[in-house]
Image 1: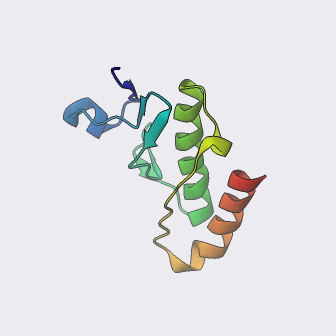
Image 2: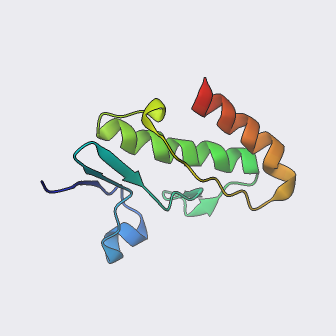
Length: 98
């Protein structure tokens, strides 16, 4: 079976053949989901805003392949600004577990 790929238009997708999401049978892989706004090419100011952008980038492609957050069995979150960890993690907890 050939994998299904979703490429919403980042520079890596356009020039390097990268795919945001790849689905093969019942396996779905998502990677390199940064908080860069692809439309404006600008990073949000706060860690919370960045977390919100990332979640949109995860949920959109999942929906394209008929999946949603409850289908995710593993995730890795990197927060680069320590002062933003409490807000970002509280937001992520609400999104992933509610």
